[in-house]
Image 1 (cartoon, rainbow, N blue to C red):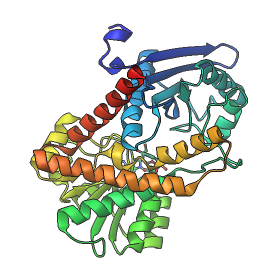
Image 2 (cartoon, helix red, strand yellow; image 1 turned 135 degrees about the vertical axis):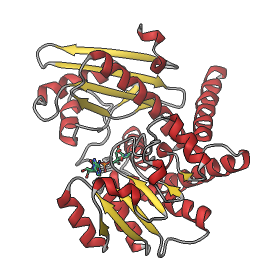
Image 3 (tube, rainbow, N blue to C red; image 1 turned 30 degrees about the horizontal axis):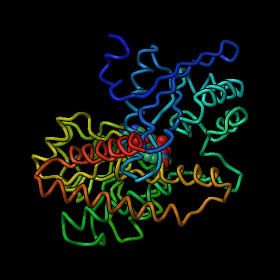
Image 4 (cartoon, rainbow, N blue to C red; image 1 turned 90 degrees about the horizontal axis):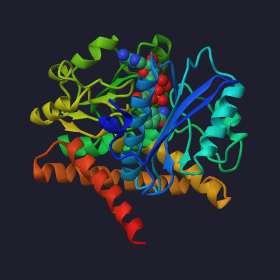
Amino acid sequence: MTLFDSPAFEGHEGVHAFADEKSGLKCIIAVHSTARGPAAGGCRMWPYPSSEAALEDALKLSRAMSYKNAMADLDLGGGKSVIIGDARTQKTPALFEAFGRAVQDVGGKYWTAEDVGVSPTDLMHARKNTYYVAGLEGHPAASGDPSPVTAEGVFRGVRLCVQRAYNRDLDGVRVAIQGVGHVGAYLAEKLHAAGARLILTDVNTEALARVAAATGAEIVAPNAIFDVDCDVFAPCALGGAVSLDTLPRIRAKVIAGGANNQLADAEAGRELFNRGVLYAPDYVINGGGIINVAGEIRALDRGEAFDPAWVDEKLDRLAQTLEEVLDQAQRERRPTHEVANEIARARIEGAAEKRAAA
Ligand code: NAD
């Protein structure tokens, strides 16, 4: 299959491949859409088994960023970069300096930030050679760790879903959280403060014990989280938690969490709907992180300091968008993720038409 025939290529404006022999950099920068503004999305460093696998991942992730940025109502398009390599053993300052040159070569059509395997320190090296980096630390426009903002958006989304599914507030509601890393731990704190009763799991037993102690939560083994008696299931670990295998075990009427790619496949999304489970589409509810990054891009572009009030306003708007998705899905009796995809595509196409007419 050629690049242009790949289903993942669909709608992409450009795909850029860069290699730097000296530092060993091999990276792909995929720009899905700049209709709403410059493409923004993090850089992932991963030991992909082949360049085809890296390309496929870059394409899927960049399109997902277009959808996420559109639903977060940001003036940003979607893009993503991947570096082929092992983040534990193959990172060097020179590698990220070369990556910075690659980002600069895309000419401002793509803004990079952190993703799996890439830290703010790595981005500082990239920054030596490009302007188009967000997610840095130690300057007035810096947005810092996006996880608390992601968790705040997820918290508001969980509250909204509980209101709709159970007609109650969070006090006494049982929430099962899978994964108490950056996002899951902040989410647990917020839910605990709102009176929710928590059941937690994580493969990292140290983190699990710490968060459980702080929130008075019950702990279960990783595989047992699907079977617990709960009102909300909040996936906050890796992707694919909701599948045709796990769904029959999940007792919650609400699935709402911070993880990306929660649905193992489209069938799982359909099945959720058939079972009457209220699902908050992942890339809508977890848009707080990219809103935070967008706050940094905005501040850099204006030469101003980072403005938390702007971020908070966007989070409010994100909750409204989630409500619109849930309303439309209910009205039309359709799965929420299908409605979200449709709205995202319409927002992107609308921006493209406006740009073409200008
Ligand atoms: P993290 O690595 O800090 O946390 C993930 C946690 O999940 C870790 O503690 C890990 O031990 C645990 N985990 C892994 N496999 C598990 C399993 N099988 N069962 C139980 N626990 C397991 O990552 P994070 O930044 O908190 O992100 C969590 C999810 O949210 C990811 O899917 C990420 O893509 C998504 N996300 C994060 C942000 C952000 O701002 N950090 C923004 C948007 C989306």
